Length: 178
Image 1: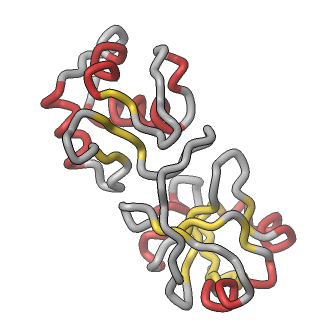
Image 2: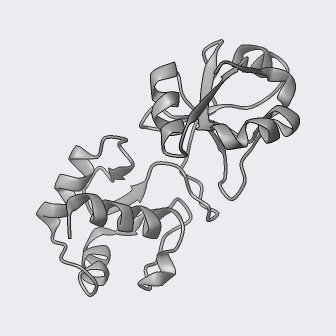
């Protein structure tokens, strides 16, 4: 198994389906590192050094260790109810959302919905949004008037890896860029 494949499997476990291996997450999404390694190792090779390498080299910084290194969690993107202890922050005036072109008309009509996740994910720059959009085929980028949203009472959070999160972006705050 490649590191990328193992990282994807960890993402599945820590964000969506810990029950696949009988993993327990606490209310903040933390899992015991030794337990995670033991359970994942039943399906694919994983040791502490490999896990540390995945966390350190993940291009999206998906994972964090606790200060003492005994716990691990996904930073955001959960579809299961966990509180990753994000502080509410004022966002920059403009944020971006990248998606696949096939979702454009739905987003224009309904705005950005969190779907199965806990939050809508937003990027602080166009290039990151474009990379996200490419995962869904031809990318479509929306400009989000996050400053006006915040002034209108919407809450924003920033995960430790820099992704901006909010529960919904109504269509009136969106501008289709390309």
